[in-house]
Image 1 (cartoon, rainbow, N blue to C red):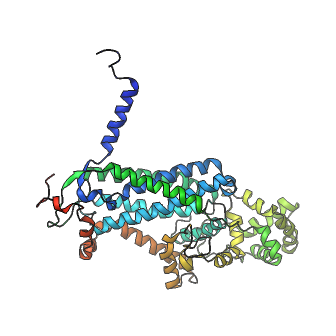
Image 2 (image 1 turned 135 degrees about the horizontal axis):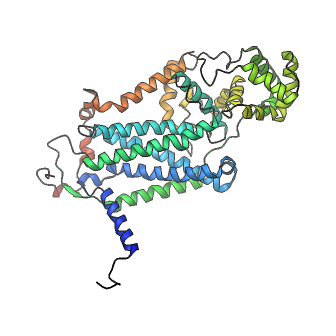
Image 3 (image 1 turned 180 degrees about the vertical axis):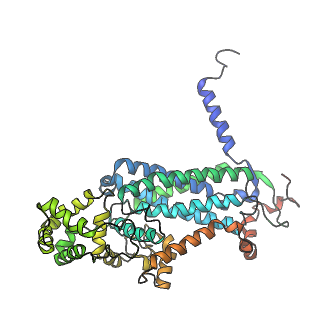
Length: 446
């Protein structure tokens, strides 16, 4: 062999990459496996890649960039549309798995990993909204804190804390999803595409059409980029204490008085757990007075009156955010105690009790981009059982959603219930061979 015929280092790397890709691919599958029903997993991965890339850029550039810079707004919109696509595809993917009984032994853990991914994605979206830096972030953070407290996880999870929110959304949940995604695919690759559970369904094994798979992924990618260009992620400026002072100074002063007497919503919260365990008199009145006005604490009337100019200038809210080791917790609780967040959410028409925040901030049920339409069942739950006015509403909602998620994850192991898809008998439509004329009389032996 001459020197020219010897493989170069570039050739060796190329061959190694091709070998790796070849091992990752599924090469043979039932003929119906090339239909889009069985390509949803790859489309979900495509959306996830867009989420990772756009999310990484957003994390590095910062909030001011994605709120006001035209390129930042576009990347933020790409991130939003990627979320919309990811969740919609995951729902369809789970629906196909359910209808075709793709969870039957030995594929039960395939379903379990996928179901856990789906539940984590739903949780992940809310932590993401908490980072947007707009009014939606404020309202969802307060609502989320109540939800986590209702589930008795408020000791560890505080959506009001900006940095904890950031860590959960950017690192903890994404890494968990990626790990589960790998395990999910390893099992799919091991067991292959699920086969019909009925003996009378004929199929043949054919080569996997990777070209159509990549084409579908490219169409999805272009769709996300185009939609993000024409329909930007909505933005409504956040509420501020200074803004409330300008509109209704008496509301701020009366709330400061309530904080001092420990009669505010925060001080009298039913479940006295984090992030509600602080002394409102010290946090909202005494310490700000000593730091911003100077001098030792005096009577409540004197301190409240002295704090009003600092609230009007914005110094009071800045102090609250800097004082708390979990940024924004105190200022959000103060805004919530004034009830300005709930009233504004009602005005915008996206409070949980209405449509599960499906309207988002565009004020319309059907809008572009859409809101968190996947939370509509939560809104129906709240309105049906009137959980908003129920002092235990957050706890009931948390327990109910937790039970539904557990049922969803363990579904393959539940007798009788896991046969529901066979009763519905929709799977033959999905299994229908695109080339029935060439199908053999019997299933091809693998």
